[in-house]
Image 1 (spheres, each protein chain N blue to C red):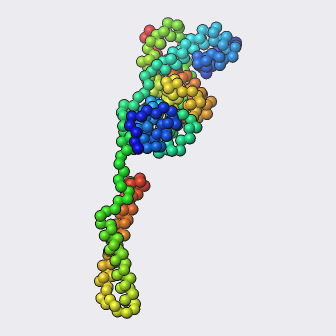
Image 2: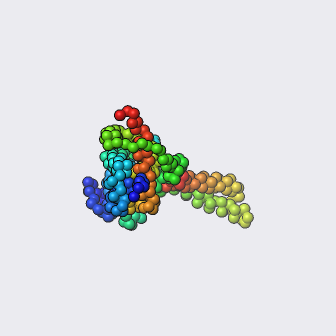
Length: 145
Length: 191
């Protein structure tokens, strides 16, 4: 066999000579060119294996565990105002309902328009507060930055 | 109930510990796999300021997906998969992923005598690290996983998702490129 082995075959020989067929094995053992090339690959491979391994230059476990164990903000945040707002919303709805009924039927609550307006404002305030809580919950579970 | 200072043995015990609420079991998983993760993050992300974020991202993904781990591979291999794909996504985002564009230039290099081989050996460790750093990130990773972490072709296949034949081919190309690079820079006139 006159043709030299290619780099892949020479590397195969260095990694595991059993991977080469008889004629190729015979060639590499008798060819100065291929044998020296094999020595170069052997040096490179052994050199790589003796290089220092990469290591993290920071405390990965500490960083990650701090993130995992970070106390979550209470997702079911109930501000002290909320029960009051909820009550006022219901009261406002009740007044609104009664005002609408009196407007269209008996004049039981004449001049209840101001009350209706107050009820409406309270209703808006309640909706705004609930929406704010909803945004906070979304932010907590990461759906809102 | 959190258990303190318990060292878990097998992968099953570790996972059971984490799922049972012992966060220190996950700290143990991190310590056992950070070497493998470091190899991939350093070779694929390089000296990037985002390395720390990448590592945290990798382990947070591992923590969140641990309930779905079915022991189809070793736990370290599974973490390695997450690390590899996270780094790969990073490379693609940075437009640095180009394994098939790696030029296989055939540089005419003269023969080296046995004496020159000896001198080549002496200087090799000093220049090998920088030669490896000049390889494309994916080749650096494969070289590191095979020769330094001593993973098998099968384990590298499981981590990267690349066919075993492709892993072998890339490794052959990487080593050939290293040899070409080293000999090109190795000035025989300095002997």
